[in-house]
Structures are given as C-alpha cells and as structure tokens.
Length: 139
Image (cartoon, rainbow, N blue to C red; front, side):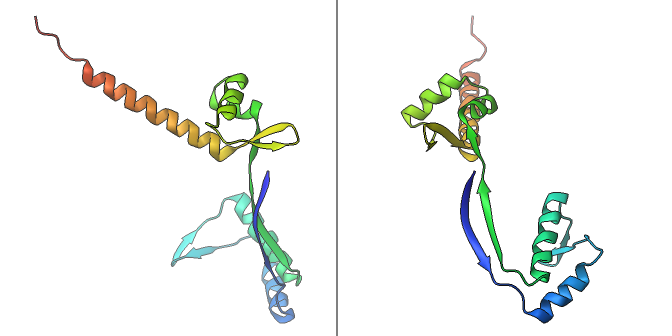
C-alpha cells in the first residue's frame, strides 16, 4: 500500500472540542448531508468518521490520507484470471505498470482493474465485429 497526499488539520479549539465530545458521547449515529440530501454511510465509513470526530473532540491534530492498494504479482494475476508468468511478462513489456519493493514487484489494484476493463472492451469490440461479418449466405 502506498500513502497518498496526507492532509494535516490542527486540533479544534477547546470549546469546540468539548461541544463535539458532548455530542459524540454514547452515540455512533452520524448523519451526513451533501447538497441538502441525507446519505447513510456504510459501517466502515461511519466508523472512520466517528474516529476522526472523536480525535477532534479530544483536541488532537489529525492527518487524513488515502492508501492505494498494492498487490503482489500472484494476487494480481489471480484477480485478472491469468498466469503469474504472463503477468510478469506484461510488466516487463510495460503493458501494466509495476513498482518494486526491493526485488518484489507490486501492482496497483487500479492498474489491474484498468487492464481488465480494456480487455473487456477489446472482447466486446471483437465480438461486435465478428457479428457484423456473419450473415445469411446467398445460394
């Protein structure tokens, strides 16, 4: 996993932190409004938001960042439904980007998913082209 663009936010002023702490005590129910629309967060997102707010309520500074999922070549090959050797050859040819951790190759999940989408598109295009060439034969 690779760390991406962290954002650091200072702790809340004591009075705001105390109000937030009071609001959070005994409750994990968080309602989110985006452009006036209520959204229910999935449990993982809700837990992350409650954790973030809890840290703010204690006056802590908080760093928020995302993590990119990095796969081993074995896991990436399994996900793509191809052999490990074929995947390694594709990374050698530069068809799929690869990062090295020492001597070990790591592939971003997003890169494998993009490759799979490209394969799906090529497959659909090929099937469409084959369907256009097939038709009734005149006798």
